Image 1 (tube, one colour):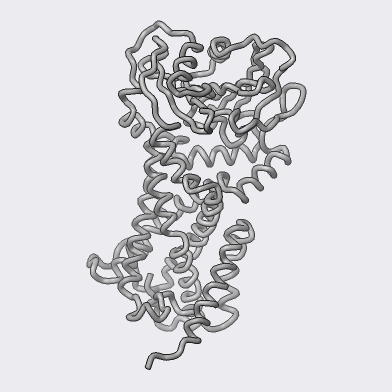
Image 2: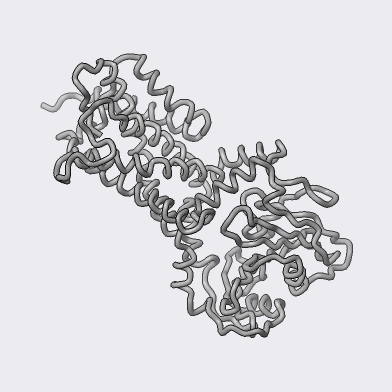
Amino acid sequence: MGRQQSKGAPDILSGAYRAVWRWHFYAGVLVMPVLMLLALTGGLYLFRDEIDQAVYSRMATVPASARQAPPEAWAAAAEQVGQGRAAALILPARADQAVRIRVDRPDGGQRTVFVDPHTGHVTGETGYGGVMETVKRLHSLTLFGPVMNLVVEIVAGWTIVLCATGLYLWWPRRRRVGVVALTSTDPRRRPFWRDLHALTGLYVGGVLLFLAVTGMPWSAVWGDRVMDGVRTSGLGRPAAPVAGAWQAAEHADHPQGAGWTMEGMTLPAHAHHPASAGLSEVVALAEAAGLPRPYAVSIPKAAVTTWTVTAQVTRVQDTRALYIDPAQGKVVADIGYSQFGAGAKAIEWGIYTHQGTQFGPINRWVMLAGCIGVWLLAISGLMMWWKRRPPKLSKGLIGAPPAPDGLKLRVAVLAIVLPLCLLYPLTGASLVVALVAERLIRALFRSRPAAA
C-alpha cells in the first residue's frame, strides 16, 4: 500500500507506518514464493477426488457386481503385480470402484495396485498414491527432503506476520485509499495495485491466517512440541483400552488414514497365541462393527501389532478407528472422535477444515478463495514494487521501505513480530538470520568504494 496520510496526522504515524511496512515487505519477500507453491498445490488438493477420478478412471472403475472375491485374493494379486508385500488397502464406497492396495517393495519403494473386488483381477498399477500423493508431498515440501518440513513452519509463521502487519497497513487512518472498494480502475497506476493488494488481503486475510495456523500441526518443531504437549496432558488421544499402552508402530506399520491424534499408534497383539484372523476375518469384523465404507485396512508386518481399520471420512466427528487383535480374532479397541481430548478435537477440526471437507462444498470454495488470494497478493505486490523500484538495483537497493529513525518505533514493530516468533521458534530463528543478513549487506555496500 501507499504511504499517503491525512494532513495534520502526527509524525509518529509516518514512522510507525514505514516500520511496519518494512517488516511486511521483508516477510513477503521471504515467504511469498513458497506460499505461492503451497497455495497452488493446496488448491489442487481441494479437488483431489475429482482429479484422481479423471486420471485413474480406467483403473479405478470396475463393473458392479454382488459377487466378491476373497480379500486374500486381492492381496495376492496386488503382491504379484507390485512385487512386494500388501501393506494396506482401501475398500471403496461403491460397488463399481476398485480396491486400492498399497504394496511395499523390498527396495523401499511403494506402489498402488487397483484390484477388482468382484473378480480379484488387477485393473492397473501406479506409484503410491498416484498424482495426488505427489501434489501432497509438494504441498508439504517433503518431496524435496525431510528437512524442508522445517521450511513449512517458517513460512506459516511469517504468513501470520504478513497478516498482522498487513492489517495494520490497511487500517484507513482517514487516508484517501481503497478501504472496501477500489479507488482507481487504471491498472497502469500504482494506486490500483495498492488497493487491489490491500482489499485482497482484507477479504481473504482471515482465510490465510486460518490456513497458516491449522497447517502448523504438520510442522517438524512446533507440530511435534504441541503433539507431545497435548498427548501428555491428557488432552489428546484416549487412554489405551486394553492392558498395556499405545505403542509407536514401525514406519511400515503406520495405520493408514488414522489422523493426527492416532497417527503412528497401534496396540500390542497377543503374538504368543496362534494367529487366527486373516484379511477376510478383519474385513468381516469391520463390517460387523458397522464401519461405513470407504475404510482403510492396515496390515501389520510385525505379528506383535494389531491390525488397524480406519474410516475415510470428510467430517471430523465421523472419525473412527478399529484395532483388531489377529490372535484373538476380535476388536480390542473402537476409538472415535468423542473419546479424544479437547486439544485433539480442536486440532483435528482445524485439519479437516483446512483440507476443505468439514463443512461440505462451501468449505472447499472458501479455502480455494484463500489460495487464489495468495496469488493475487503476490502479483499485486510485485507490481507495486516494480512501479517504485530504485533505478539502480546493482547498488544493493532492492526497493524496501526506508528504515525509520528512532528506537521506540522499532520496539513498537517488534512488539507485533516478537510474540509470534516466540510462539513459533523457527520463525524467530529466521527473524534473527534476516536481521543479521540485512546488517551485513548494508555494511558491505557502505564499504564499497564509489565508482570513478
